[in-house]
Image 1 (cartoon, helix red, strand yellow):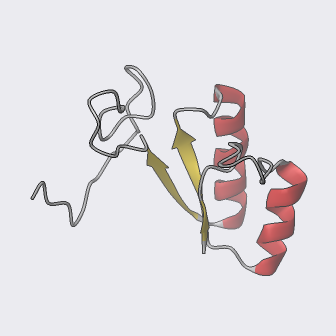
Image 2 (cartoon, one colour):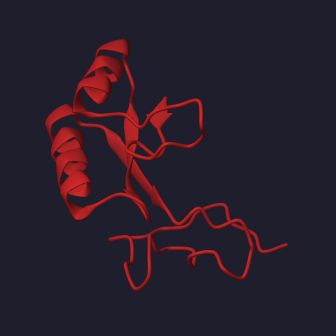
Length: 94
């Protein structure tokens, strides 16, 4: 199980996670976390990277690209902010 959008509220009925909430999920056995997201601050990214390294988790990153012209480009998580070591697998433009 991987946590997506860790510090981002994805609807009006959910709250973003905080460090305590992520630690609670670690105890439940999550295996990964989305580190790079266009609404995640540099400070939050640093914290998530620390958690990933300390717990040996998988990490992801994304632009939330849904095919609209206004979407952030695949492989980036904001304007001119490329995901380090970006690797796109099993992708088809069809």
